[in-house]
Length: 238
Ligand code: URA
Image (cartoon, rainbow, N blue to C red; front, side, top):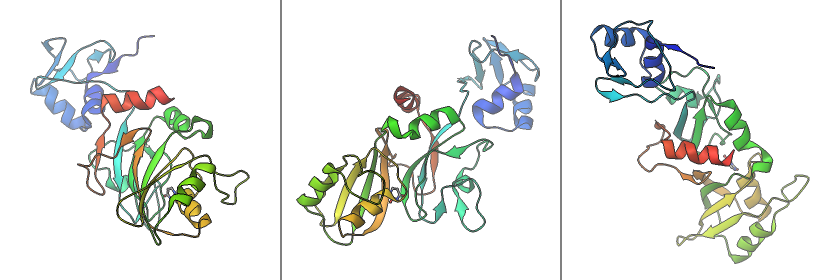
């Protein structure tokens, strides 16, 4: 079935601009549809077919939004909260309606969080049977050792019905600094895994998820849209 969309709405969806800004672009003659200047705000376009450009730049239509966010400590992984700033408080200049975080990071954990309005994809990425990889950088109270590496690989009792699935623990050069890759997302999982080894996490940052690394250009509290390749990568896992 062909779903047509008003041109002013199409501009808002693609650029994140407001309805009144989109109407201004149209009035000024900045918008072309299939090579023809179009000024009518209620002109109907087929998002999957028509080539729409704004000031010469072709716009690509995406049904859903996919963002990469660098969560700072002290920000709560929720849409609303009475006490703390939420991830949504950081997403400026975006139509935030419908956006939510994919999974959770603790209040004191930093790093990579995807935000989307695509409930189906989020659900699939988080499904326990999907085994999507998450990699963390951690600073520990005590240096980890080779026995820890083996124990993480074998699975740990952290008070769940079953031991944790095999996890990769890499010891970094600086004593006490490690990376860990897990394929589950249990509550406080990394902290509980180290607790089970008699150790304690003093700093935790997610550095990759689903094979997509946190963009080093993103400062704490900053976000950007996922690239086409990154979205494809997530789709391929669903
Ligand atoms: N494991 C934890 O313990 N905390 C997080 O925020 C994420 C994974």
